[in-house]
Image (cartoon, rainbow, N blue to C red; front, top):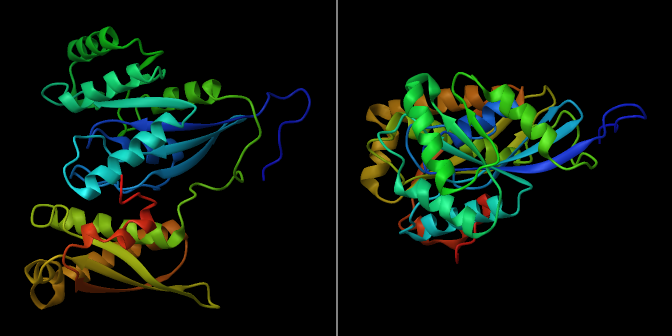
Length: 307
């Protein structure tokens, strides 16, 4: 645990900050930017974050524990319901809530408006972060801000670009001042509480999404089956990519195994960078029909299959 400020220094602060929004609003990119390191996967596909990810950052005397939640949308499948339930649990339990909105979208979607209404009904204060200001005219930003603040009285409104970092420092500084006084809950150098096995699986899943997001939108999951550390500091990781049909397995493998080799190469680099270790990665692809209905698949993500 980090030393707390001594007499004459600013009192230590610590709090949970939930980042909520519709799918693909930029939540994971913002959390990674606030932390200064990758703790959540980022993909052009919506609904890629499946569990609550805790990213941890220090700003002055404040420790911010950032909860990157799954996108909130109208759930249809069992996995959808579990993801949305996790998102609302993360939001309503937090000390502060940031609603992030994709300002570059053609319009403010019904999912975003539904989130605003539920926050208002729950009596929760929130601040508004309009994202992608680098792609949005100023008059549109002001219009979106006015309309959303008319629907709910946000405590503050920030204009940001989670991708470029524009405005993110101002947001982090505000949150550092807004969280309650109290001792830090994590060591100063800790960036996430996500287990390394799960982080490694998520980084591999990110590569699958990036390379195959049109062919396999949500039919896959990745699990780390084995993890062996060696005396030279390297680590050997064995993972399984689960798909639902043989035709999907063929897509992941690619002709002559080229696709899974490309996925593995990129995933190995990402995992190695996250661990600061040499990584030996072995990935198998297996068919498991209806894995989305298997309660055991939900436990690594901390999701409730009965939500």
